[in-house]
Image (cartoon, rainbow, N blue to C red):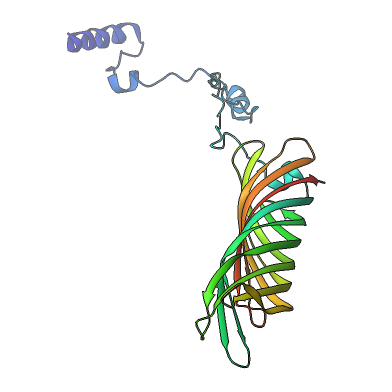
Length: 275
C-alpha cells in the first residue's frame, strides 16, 4: 500500500511539477516537536526562587505520664537530742544493796579476817550531760551509804567474835552512753563511766568472854579509790522540758587499805530538766 501510494505520488508530481511524497520515517515522527522559541529557552534557563518542600504534617505528641517516686522511708524518728534538747540536769535518789567485803586485822596475839555480808543502803546524787543525736556524755556526783550485817565468827583462839561495819563513799565519775527511742515519749539507755571515790569504812567487833560480849577492836579507814559503773534504764518525757528516769547501776569500788573491794547494786529514780 505504501509503495503504491509513493508511485501514485511520483506520477502526479510529474504531471503537476510538485515534489513527490517521501517515505515516512517512523523513528523521526516519534521525536518531540520543538515548539518553544530561543527566548523562551533563555527564560527557562534563568535561576528561579528556591522552592522548599512542603513541611510534613506533625502529629501531636502523646502526653507524658508523670513519674511518681515513692519514698521507702515512711517515718523518720527524731533523735534524743531533737526530742529533749542539747543538755540535761537531773538529781536522783536511790536504794542500794552492797556485796560483802573482807576485813583483815591483827593483834598481838591473834589474827582476824572477817567477811562482812552486805546490807541495804541508800544513795543521792546529781547527774548532768550533753547529747549528740542519740549519744550521751555525762558527769555524775553521788554519795552512797551502806551498812554491813552483823557477823559472828571465831578467831584463831576459837573465841567467838561479833563484827559489824559501815561503808560510805563520795564518787565523781564521767562517762558516755547511747539512747534508743521506743515511743514518742519513752526511751531506754545504757551508760559506762569511770572515776574516783573517797571511800570510808568502819569496823567494830566484840568478843564473848564466857559470860558476856566485851569490846575487842574498832577501826576506821578511808582512802581515795578508783570507781567504775555500768547502768541501764528507762526515761519518760512527761513534759516538754522535763523527764523522769528509773534505772539500775552497778558500782564498783577498789580496795580501801584493810578492806577489800566491793560492788554496789543501785536502783535509782531521777527527775530532771532538759534544755
